Length: 103
Image (tube, rainbow, N blue to C red; front, side, top):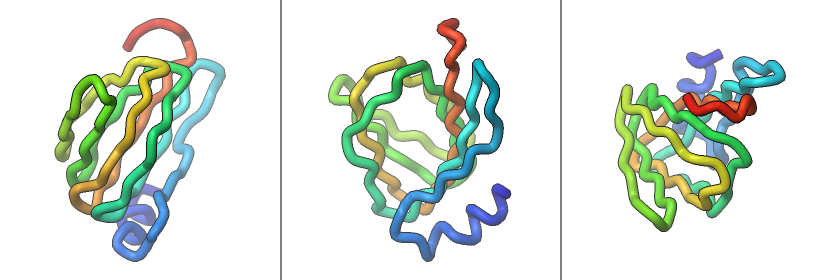
């Protein structure tokens, strides 16, 4: 599945989003973003751990701006409004923790 996302990134004008795993406590979502693609302001209801697999993104939470590159990880607290900009063709895993415990 991840190879398929990589193959589609450079041609897609929209984010490529695939749920990799889901249970009551956890959701793992793969994202593919073409260079310069922007996810406008949004927030998540739970803790999210972002694991970069390829490329580079910028996360602007209005509190801080963070650049993530290949193999970097970042924890985004719940309800933080943020936007994501892809600085290169990028792929990441986002792990959502619905268990209310921190990572």
